[in-house]
Image 1 (cartoon, rainbow, N blue to C red):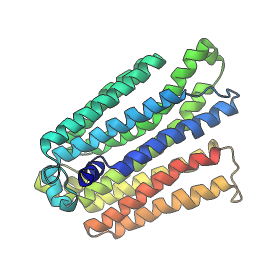
Image 2: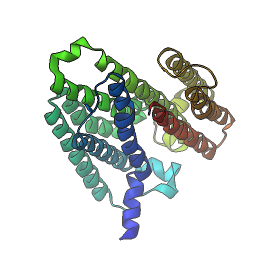
Image 3: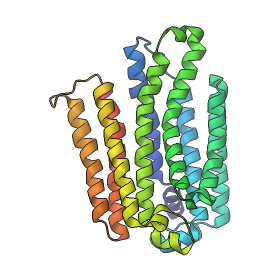
Image 4: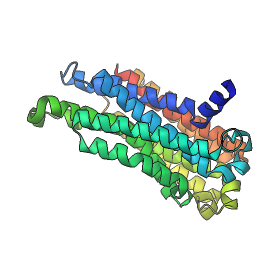
Amino acid sequence: MIDKIKNILQLVRFSNLFFLGVLVYVMDKWVVSYVLDAEMFYGQGLPWYILLLIAAATILIAAGGYVINDYFDIKIDRINRPDQLIVTQYISKETAMRLSIGLSGVGMVCGIVVAFLLRSTTIGILFAIIPGLLWFYSSSYKRLLIVGNVTIALLSATSILMIAIANVANLQLKFGDLLLYTNLTDKIYAWVGGFSLFAFLLTWIREIVKDLQDQMGDREYECHSMPIVWGNTATKIVVTALIILTTVLIGWFWYSILPFGHSWQSFSTRYIVLAIIIPLWGALWLLWAAKIPSDYRTCQLVLKLTMFLGMLYSFVLR
């Protein structure tokens, strides 16, 4: 029984789901709350039960997505990561399919309840289509050049942006047209959107590196990933360009928007350089030095850490 629970937790990527839950909380309680307090809208954030429903919907839909991804990737994973194969080895395909549908279905219901409570058509549509996008990503999109990488990056960014959409809908319910006389909604979208864009770029970069790691199985089953179509060198150049773009955007955000000063004495500046920029470029160095799949895996882990540290920048706001 314990082994079965461990296998299910591994299948749904429990550590990733935990990070996702923390991320939802941080975006609401640290980032959006910072904006609301700065604009003197004290205590006007999301009610706890709506935040809980958003977190549940996001986590359950993501879990269902992980399961269906492994369901469709059985043959590829037998080559790329045979030691991590759960579906067919410990859990039947039928069980995996039922688990994915169940998790995604409950998550969708939670999301639609949020949409009903906040009277937001946008939230309802997003929570209704995201499970479908995850299904098509796993079954076909991920095998298409660029499309698969961008799809999963957009879904990652949307999970963060959802907090801004929900908070704006909540404020519109409370204050209606009065919000038109403030720039509060613009500031919420600007701040949360900045983190969302960071998540999009880091996820896109990490997905490309993952394709470099998984070339053997992907080539066997005719996936049209960037390394297979363009080659390793061209793919690494694309990643380099994306990391340069990310660095430029972080620099612009630091200089133009952040209110904490631009000197090295500022904790904000030191955090951005030491915890985000240096690890990001360290990952780039690891990428160009990588020769075998385990090297690319190390690069992926550094990118995941960079994304985590980037999201934790929000604690500077508190």
